[in-house]
Image 1: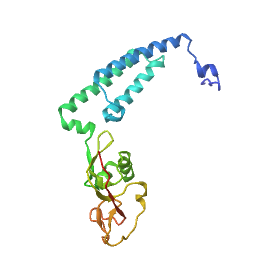
Image 2: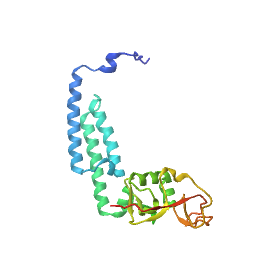
Image 3: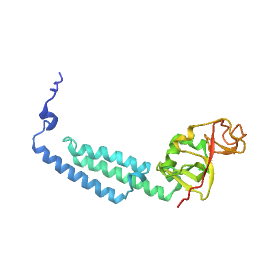
Length: 229
C-alpha cells in the first residue's frame, strides 16, 4: 500500500527527506552543469532572446530540461546529463552548419521573410497563411511609430517573428491605424478618398467595393505629412 504523504510537513517542504549534506551536492552539481553548459553555448555562439530562431529556441527548451533535472535530482547521474547537453548542442551546431551551406535547409529550419505590406496595402493572403491578425500587424506598426499604413512601402514578418518596415518620405494618404481607425462608414463626402479597413487600399469616395480585396468596410483616408528621420 502506498505510503501517504503528510500534509504541511514543513521539513519535507523546505528541506526534503535527503540528509543536509545533499545541499552541498546540489551546489557541486549546479556549478558543474552550469559551467559545462555555458562553455558549450559559448562554443556555438548565440544571439539575443528577441533574435532567436526556431532552432535556437528549441535548444533553450531542451537544455532547460536536461540542465534543471541534473542540478537537484539525486538519482540523475551527472554523466547522463552532460551527455544529453553535449548531444543537444552538437546537433544544434550541425544544423547551423547545414543552414549556412544550403538555403533550402535554412528555409526549412529557420523559415523566410514574408511580405505582408507593399505600397501601403496589406497582403491578406500572407496574413492568413501566417495566422497573423490585422490587429497584430497594426500593433507592430504602432510600436514603430507608424500611424498611417500608407507610410509603409514594404513590410515583412521575419523568421524571428518580428516585423520590419521600410518607410516612404513625404506626405501620404491612407488608412489611419490609430485605435480610432475602427470607425467605419459606407459613404464619404464627394471629392474625399476613403481607405479599405481590410487591406488599406485608397479609392475615391464613390467606390462601393474594394478593388483589391472586395471588402465593403471603409474609413476616411487620412493625409500623413510627418517628417521621418
